[in-house]
Image (cartoon, rainbow, N blue to C red; front, side, top):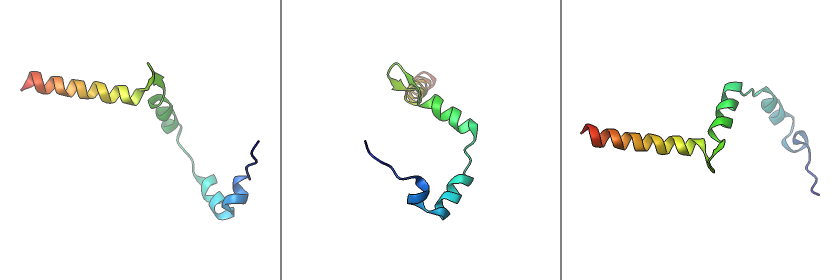
Length: 64
């Protein structure tokens, strides 16, 4: 089993004060968990990118 020193001991007090002040909005956490959730073995962001590419190519093909 590996021992890890507490972050305060490694980073020092100045870095810890910056880290403690950083607040991540809940909206970012929800979006991050949604985009990286697995759907059929791949992250959702990959499926969204694939579907958008297919739709773009269909629009270009059928519209032009």
